[in-house]
Image (cartoon, rainbow, N blue to C red; front, top):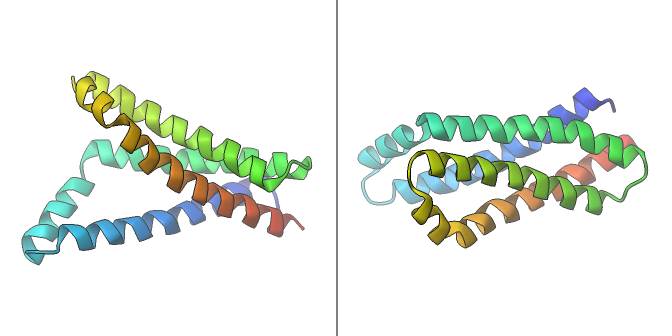
Length: 141
């Protein structure tokens, strides 16, 4: 498996996880009034900040996936590769959220919700990267 294919594979795994989470959020948003709920959901997802968050998520997944296959080829355990790259991807997303909050004047809100927000980003990213690193290891053999 070459680096380009590894990046695409990690992006595909990330896409599956995002679709699953988006479906869960869609069901939660449209619970009471479906017509208004779906409109609010679509409006929230078309926000430029959300779109740039997803672009950063998939871009970092692609480039970190290219890096991860090299580490797996060198013999690093896939669990270690998954943890390192999961934390790197989470750090990139948290820095983005920090910068967006700082430029919008919402630092106090971010600092108040930082522990919960960090868990909401770090845990799914670690899970995605465990699956991705295991998949890359299996495809390498």
